Image 1: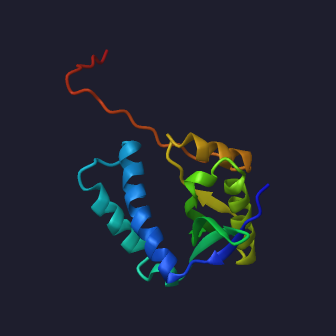
Image 2: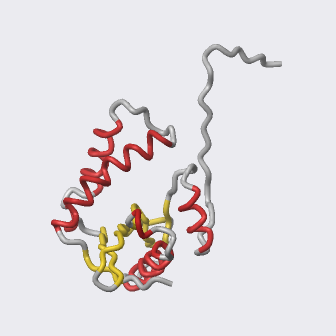
Amino acid sequence: MAEVRLDPMTSEEYAAYHRDAVLAYAEAHVSAKSWPAEGARQRAIDEYAELLPEGVATPGHHLYTARNGGQEIGMIWFAERTHGADRVAYLYDIKVETDLRGQGHGEALMRAMEHEVRSVGLKAVRLQVFGNNSVARSLYRKLGYIETNVVMAKVLDRQTKTQVG
């Protein structure tokens, strides 16, 4: 399995991450049909601004650059949140560089993040994943994550009449 070291993300690394992440986040929502294409980029920009108003210095947020040896392999971002009576980590983003996928880096990155979560005294990790992201869902299941709720949607054809009987 790949070995991963998590280094706190620098402001420069964050600027590069943010530029790409906003676009990817908007595209993921459009692809999952949870947002219309029109306005998606601005909505993503607004959500990032609300979540990370101080970038890497935003209190309660942990952003890391992941490395294997000296090679940058990706990043991970979690925040401290309250869930019921517990303090938990909420995983906002994980990324493994495209050309390095399928080599165990995602699993190693998740395990390294879990170590960091424990080190700040949090008891669990929660996350949300797009239903159409089968690779990520498979990874999370492999690592012992379970589905706690599922949101489903259906786009209705305006031309079809439904009979209620």
